[in-house]
Every structure is written in C-alpha cells, then in structure tokens.
Length: 157
Ligand SMILES: [Zn+2]
Image 1: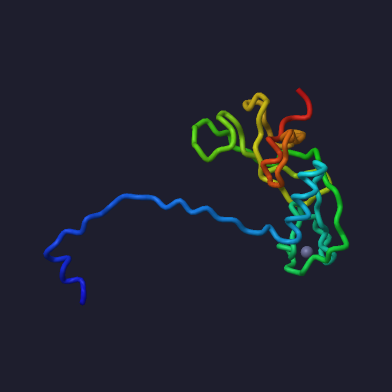
Image 2: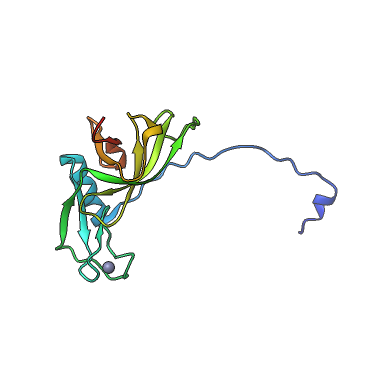
C-alpha cells in the first residue's frame, strides 16, 4: 500500500503537543559541582593537568586539549567574577527564570579560565559593561542546579 490515497483524500492535520518529562544524571563531576554549590554556595572547578586550564563548571575531559582530567586537581573559584559579555533581555518569555528586563552574561569567575553563563539583575542594566565585577546572589533554598544562583549583580552600587 502506497500513498495513492493522498490523491483522493486531503489529510486531516491535528494540532497537539507532547508533554515529555525527563531526567538525566549530571555525572560524577557535575554531581560534585552541584552538591558543593547547593550545600556550601561554593564554585568548584577542576584543572587540566595537561594544559593547566581551569574549568568551571568542571569537566571530565578538557575541551582544549581533549585529555581526561584526573580527579585530584579540584579547586574553589569565585564566587566573584568579571563580566565578559552580556545581552539585555526586554521581552517576556515563559521559560525565562526572571521577569524582564534582565541580562544574560558570560562571567569569568576569579581563578577560572572558562566562563559561566548566567543571569544579571538587581542593577542598572544600562550601566553594564565588560570588565565589571559581579557577585552571585544565591537562592535561599538551593536544589542543586545552576538556578541555585538567583542571578549575578555588581559588587558595587
Ligand atoms: Zn587541557
């Protein structure tokens, strides 16, 4: 049986959506990072013993030199950091964790060579500029994910 029926009958198209809950493990390295963030409000990083790059969030394998990163060279970085890039959001969208206006930024935590992408709020967004010093504002009830950090905000002002 082929598609001949399509020549005689116009197919009916039903609109719908699929709600698909899912879960996955963040792995050994991610679990250690998120448990420390949740329980102590600390940012753990790991250092590639081959190229010396410090990664936060930590990695199993170095994205620069592709070598496995051994477990022994973990360190704490941040909590403050430097704003590298940002974009200000003015539109409302249901999936966003904050009501606009706010900013998404790339932040280099002190002691790290990589950046974290996160929200920036509770500040004059027109005054944001690369190089600004930022600090995290943590949720009072942390659950072990990146939104345990409510947002970053300037260290001064
Ligand atoms: Zn490396």
